[in-house]
Image 1 (cartoon, rainbow, N blue to C red):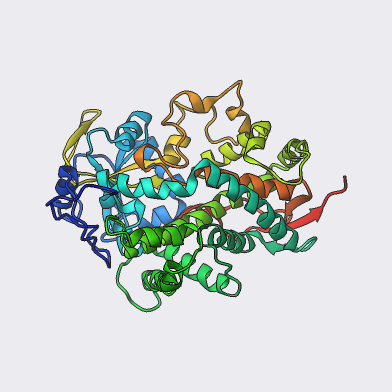
Image 2: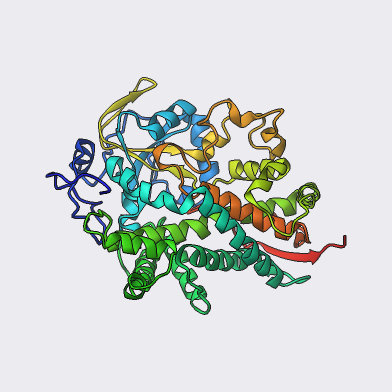
Length: 477
């Protein structure tokens, strides 16, 4: 049995389309879910701008989130408030706060409430669970990322990504982001669902884009044409697409992760319902291709700007004599690892980790009221001058064994979050990224149009503003 059933009737996040009627006993969950759904905004004693009526500083955040945060950090130090997207939050930008909030030893910080604004989109996915509830579901989902499973993924990704790269146009400009996103969604569906998308790929991608854009919608009213309306429509489509496969999957002999979870949900002693399996799968597919699209686009954009690193990485990758890259080969790729990490330092796919405190607490002499949105700003941590040498300079060598700037403290470099909610797919993301680079850089030079300026939109996650037009040219060996 996944978790002991008792008599406390706490439910899943308010605001979702679905309620989890599994009975759990957890006083921390009960305390969290007893809080008002609207966060506390009695924060006049905390420094930070008021912003505009209703929308606060939303426009500043949309325009240049990193620049806005750096400005507030310079003006107010590592703790400040900022309003936007319907609420006011207290932002924490130092290591000790990140450790306190993400380790959450006192069980005072809720991910479910922190991400409550997107509950209507992600419903009961693993992101929206806390404490014992989170542990139960995470233990099941971790089966998708065990070492033997990852090795199988690597084998299949080598074939899929090699074929995908070879199919991209050569010696003519194309938008890298569009082609990459489609390829990675096809891979995720194949690996986690055993499904070949074919013509469905473009339609599913459109709905995933709508879901992503809705997470930073200024309004949550379902008015036709708005990003929130499109996002809600997109999530309904994605869930319906999965629901339509249930009967076939439950009665099949297929061994993919989605089918395995569906069969598990049929066990009378399982606490994972079919609805929860669908929610977890939507989030898994979203994370497996959207966040990795962001990371790989950032990598390729910076390789086009720092062209000398293409040669450095190509030389290293060409030392692998096999035609495919295995997980065991990663230890032979220190330069690739350094470049990968420096890109993640500058452009973490998740800009900020959202939490809400359950009880009042004090930090650095400042009292934070109960039920306050308490965010760990990853981008600020990654550019903190106390932790990094010349933090705004792109310098992969800072991750070398000789310098190892990232090893001063385990909470200064958090591209995949930290604590109990650390990204489940961290190893999968690394495998997929390095295998794609293996098949791309060993065989091709990548360039962008002359004079193009490196420009990203940072919300909802870093992506090139222009779709990253590139040209790929085969190299001669």
